[in-house]
Length: 72
Image (cartoon, rainbow, N blue to C red; front, side):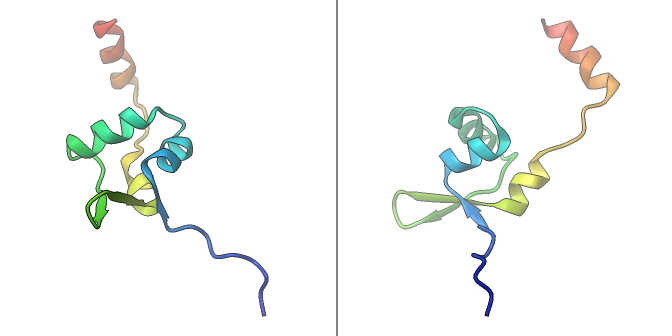
């Protein structure tokens, strides 16, 4: 019998923000923009699957860096 706890599959908005090292408002914005899938449980509880958080991350390319410089 294993004594290890199963890896957490879902995260609250706050836990998701810690996982991605960003502000909770960033997670809310990603959900609102459709960039991150979230699931409502009941009236208030929102959960985000770990695999959806991992999919939301994308590699930064040189073009992304140049574009970000144009906005600064």
